[in-house]
Amino acid sequence: MVACTLLLVLSQHGHAAPPAAKPSPDAQLAAVAAVHGEAGPWAVAGYRMGTYALGKLGLAAQSHDLRVVHRSPRTPQFACVADGAQAATGASVGKLNLALEEAPFEQLATTFTNAKTGASVTLKPSKAFVARFTNTPREKAAENGRLVLSLKDADVFEVTSDGAGK
Image (cartoon, rainbow, N blue to C red; front, side):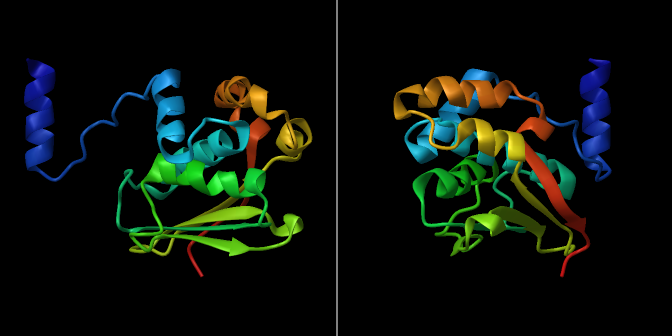
Protein backbone atom coordinates (compact mmCIF):
# COMPACT_ATOMS: atom_id res chain seq x y z
CA MET A 1 0.00 0.00 0.00
CA VAL A 2 2.80 2.42 0.88
CA ALA A 3 4.67 1.53 -2.33
CA CYS A 4 1.54 2.10 -4.43
CA THR A 5 0.93 5.45 -2.76
CA LEU A 6 4.56 6.45 -3.32
CA LEU A 7 4.34 5.52 -7.00
CA LEU A 8 1.13 7.50 -7.37
CA VAL A 9 2.68 10.56 -5.71
CA LEU A 10 5.86 10.29 -7.79
CA SER A 11 3.90 9.91 -11.03
CA GLN A 12 1.78 12.97 -10.21
CA HIS A 13 4.94 15.05 -9.75
CA GLY A 14 6.57 14.07 -13.05
CA HIS A 15 9.00 11.50 -11.68
CA ALA A 16 9.43 8.32 -13.62
CA ALA A 17 8.17 5.07 -12.22
CA PRO A 18 10.79 2.46 -11.38
CA PRO A 19 11.95 0.44 -14.39
CA ALA A 20 9.90 -2.61 -15.27
CA ALA A 21 11.22 -6.01 -14.35
CA LYS A 22 13.57 -7.53 -16.92
CA PRO A 23 11.73 -10.01 -19.14
CA SER A 24 12.57 -13.68 -18.70
CA PRO A 25 15.12 -15.23 -21.06
CA ASP A 26 12.30 -17.05 -22.86
CA ALA A 27 10.39 -13.78 -23.32
CA GLN A 28 13.50 -12.04 -24.65
CA LEU A 29 14.21 -14.85 -27.11
CA ALA A 30 10.55 -14.85 -28.19
CA ALA A 31 10.74 -11.09 -28.84
CA VAL A 32 13.76 -11.62 -31.10
CA ALA A 33 12.10 -14.53 -32.90
CA ALA A 34 8.90 -12.50 -33.42
CA VAL A 35 10.87 -9.96 -35.46
CA HIS A 36 13.61 -12.12 -36.95
CA GLY A 37 12.02 -15.54 -37.32
CA GLU A 38 14.48 -17.20 -34.95
CA ALA A 39 16.63 -16.11 -32.04
CA GLY A 40 20.07 -16.83 -33.46
CA PRO A 41 23.29 -15.43 -31.99
CA TRP A 42 23.66 -12.34 -34.17
CA ALA A 43 20.03 -11.26 -33.75
CA VAL A 44 20.27 -11.82 -29.99
CA ALA A 45 23.47 -9.73 -29.96
CA GLY A 46 21.49 -6.94 -31.63
CA TYR A 47 18.80 -7.32 -28.98
CA ARG A 48 21.40 -7.06 -26.23
CA MET A 49 22.90 -3.98 -27.91
CA GLY A 50 19.48 -2.34 -28.26
CA THR A 51 18.60 -2.99 -24.64
CA TYR A 52 21.92 -1.54 -23.49
CA ALA A 53 21.50 1.53 -25.71
CA LEU A 54 18.00 2.27 -24.41
CA GLY A 55 19.36 2.28 -20.87
CA LYS A 56 22.32 4.48 -21.78
CA LEU A 57 20.13 6.97 -23.63
CA GLY A 58 17.35 7.00 -21.06
CA LEU A 59 14.71 5.93 -23.56
CA ALA A 60 11.93 3.38 -23.39
CA ALA A 61 11.25 0.82 -26.08
CA GLN A 62 8.97 2.18 -28.81
CA SER A 63 10.27 5.74 -28.29
CA HIS A 64 9.91 7.90 -31.37
CA ASP A 65 12.95 9.84 -30.13
CA LEU A 66 15.25 6.91 -30.90
CA ARG A 67 17.19 6.69 -34.16
CA VAL A 68 19.09 3.52 -35.05
CA VAL A 69 21.58 3.12 -37.89
CA HIS A 70 23.08 -0.31 -38.44
CA ARG A 71 26.12 -0.51 -40.72
CA SER A 72 27.13 -3.92 -42.03
CA PRO A 73 27.98 -5.96 -45.06
CA ARG A 74 24.99 -7.28 -47.01
CA THR A 75 25.41 -10.66 -45.36
CA PRO A 76 22.60 -12.17 -43.29
CA GLN A 77 24.49 -12.92 -40.08
CA PHE A 78 25.84 -9.37 -39.82
CA ALA A 79 22.57 -7.74 -40.88
CA CYS A 80 20.69 -9.90 -38.33
CA VAL A 81 21.93 -7.48 -35.67
CA ALA A 82 19.47 -4.87 -37.01
CA ASP A 83 16.51 -7.21 -36.44
CA GLY A 84 17.63 -7.83 -32.88
CA ALA A 85 17.96 -4.08 -32.30
CA GLN A 86 14.44 -3.68 -33.68
CA ALA A 87 13.12 -6.36 -31.30
CA ALA A 88 14.65 -4.59 -28.30
CA THR A 89 13.89 -0.98 -29.19
CA GLY A 90 10.80 -0.99 -31.38
CA ALA A 91 12.63 1.09 -33.98
CA SER A 92 11.58 0.14 -37.49
CA VAL A 93 12.05 0.99 -41.13
CA GLY A 94 8.35 1.88 -41.33
CA LYS A 95 8.63 4.41 -38.51
CA LEU A 96 11.70 5.80 -40.29
CA ASN A 97 13.83 5.44 -37.18
CA LEU A 98 15.78 2.32 -38.23
CA ALA A 99 18.16 2.37 -41.17
CA LEU A 100 20.47 -0.29 -42.61
CA GLU A 101 23.55 1.03 -44.39
CA GLU A 102 25.89 -1.18 -46.36
CA ALA A 103 29.44 -1.02 -45.04
CA PRO A 104 32.52 -3.25 -45.03
CA PHE A 105 32.96 -5.67 -42.13
CA GLU A 106 35.58 -3.38 -40.57
CA GLN A 107 32.83 -0.76 -40.09
CA LEU A 108 30.25 -3.17 -38.62
CA ALA A 109 28.52 -1.13 -35.91
CA THR A 110 25.16 0.12 -34.74
CA THR A 111 24.57 3.70 -33.63
CA PHE A 112 21.66 4.51 -31.34
CA THR A 113 20.77 8.20 -30.98
CA ASN A 114 18.34 10.07 -28.78
CA ALA A 115 17.04 12.57 -31.34
CA LYS A 116 15.72 14.86 -28.61
CA THR A 117 19.04 15.25 -26.74
CA GLY A 118 21.58 14.38 -29.44
CA ALA A 119 23.19 11.79 -27.16
CA SER A 120 24.35 8.66 -28.95
CA VAL A 121 26.11 5.38 -28.39
CA THR A 122 27.76 3.23 -31.05
CA LEU A 123 28.21 -0.47 -30.39
CA LYS A 124 29.82 -3.27 -32.33
CA PRO A 125 30.12 -7.00 -31.75
CA SER A 126 33.16 -7.79 -29.62
CA LYS A 127 36.13 -9.58 -31.14
CA ALA A 128 35.38 -12.58 -28.92
CA PHE A 129 31.77 -12.66 -30.14
CA VAL A 130 32.82 -12.44 -33.80
CA ALA A 131 35.37 -15.24 -33.34
CA ARG A 132 32.90 -17.48 -31.55
CA PHE A 133 29.71 -16.94 -33.59
CA THR A 134 30.72 -16.20 -37.19
CA ASN A 135 29.40 -18.88 -39.53
CA THR A 136 28.01 -21.13 -36.79
CA PRO A 137 25.73 -23.93 -38.00
CA ARG A 138 22.12 -22.85 -38.59
CA GLU A 139 20.81 -25.87 -36.66
CA LYS A 140 22.54 -24.47 -33.56
CA ALA A 141 20.97 -20.99 -33.92
CA ALA A 142 18.52 -21.30 -31.00
CA GLU A 143 21.12 -22.87 -28.71
CA ASN A 144 23.68 -20.19 -29.58
CA GLY A 145 21.10 -17.42 -29.23
CA ARG A 146 20.25 -18.58 -25.71
CA LEU A 147 23.98 -18.68 -24.91
CA VAL A 148 24.46 -15.11 -26.18
CA LEU A 149 21.64 -13.97 -23.92
CA SER A 150 23.54 -15.32 -20.90
CA LEU A 151 26.95 -13.78 -21.70
CA LYS A 152 28.36 -10.61 -20.13
CA ASP A 153 27.90 -7.45 -22.20
CA ALA A 154 31.65 -7.25 -22.88
CA ASP A 155 31.59 -10.75 -24.35
CA VAL A 156 28.86 -9.72 -26.79
CA PHE A 157 29.59 -6.11 -27.76
CA GLU A 158 31.88 -3.18 -27.16
CA VAL A 159 31.16 0.52 -26.98
CA THR A 160 33.04 2.33 -29.76
CA SER A 161 31.67 5.78 -29.00
CA ASP A 162 29.53 7.23 -26.30
CA GLY A 163 28.88 10.87 -26.83
CA ALA A 164 26.65 13.88 -27.04
CA GLY A 165 25.65 13.52 -30.65
CA LYS A 166 27.08 14.69 -33.89
